[in-house]
Image 1 (cartoon, rainbow, N blue to C red):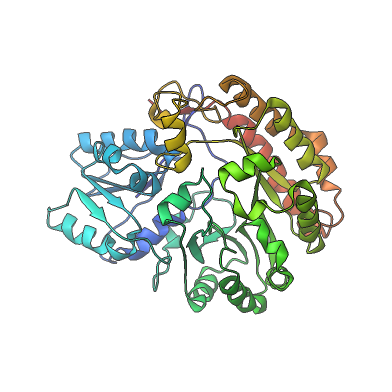
Image 2: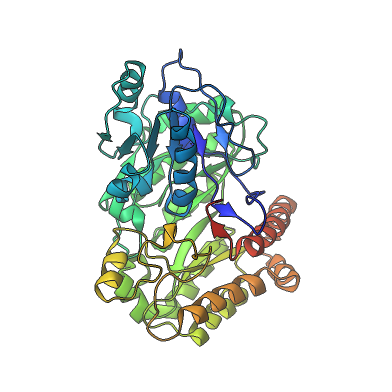
Length: 439
């Protein structure tokens, strides 16, 4: 089982020092019969040993790792090892992925992966396996022994739900799950937490609060465990103070929150439903609620919407510094394949790099892959780097550290902030302009 790298820096593969456990492969291993020997290679930090005897190579593919995944697949197939590709990119681009593998898997693995193993044993691997999407691995625990000794960050990844009920134009998750959310049984989540031993957790849910009632049930059950956790969540959580109270009491340190833009026209065009009420004043009130509960927010912004200018992007930076967000992501808007955004930009003739930017040899990480309306693509790329560099400068890190309601709320929270600020500064600046793939 292989987790591909994004690509390489000038002379070598990028070493990701902020790497987290590849949960999807741990789940896949948990679904695999115990008599099957499994080796995990994480291309972000170790060489893939192509010549080690193997009967099947399973590669998890995301859009940014597609080019590298196809390179790894080719190396195995040249040695006569059959390859199956799966993951969100394969589901969004099945015909493309099928050209680089002996088999592809679309949808979630839980219902059909044992069939893949049986077919591989008998030498009758099918070209395509298509499974429905649904709740995360019911009745199955991930195999975390495969992660030992690989230098991952000391935080356990797990999942309560998949999908999100919102329909943001740029979101591949909404496309993949068709605006649905699927939740696990709470007792299974509790059993997984007890089985893995750590008390520092990252729920990798696309939006852990998409169903407020389900989230409250989970948080009530987490309170006695005395854990600390982070996840991804939408701003509408601030409208439900019972939810906020339960979330804080259950050990939530903070969430990745998609602010995306300050411009109501941008929010309207991207259909960012949780952010559309009240404009900038509403954002300020919501931020106050987040700080009232001590949450260390990771604010996520997308840059390059149709009403964005270089100046408006710089104002996002000012907004993030003014509110002393613990962390922030200034992401150039990416036209992920088969999303409504991708389809619209293709129809308008605005896609660059031939449309499939993720495979183009000249595309670089964090570069604009489309023509914005009110600036050049280079202007957008440079504005994104400017925001990331200034937000993660030593002076800005110190300025944000002094927020008494979040980062200075306790020595533990300050230590978390300091450790991850250094790490994110290092990784953010190093990855800019990285080539996708290794060859």
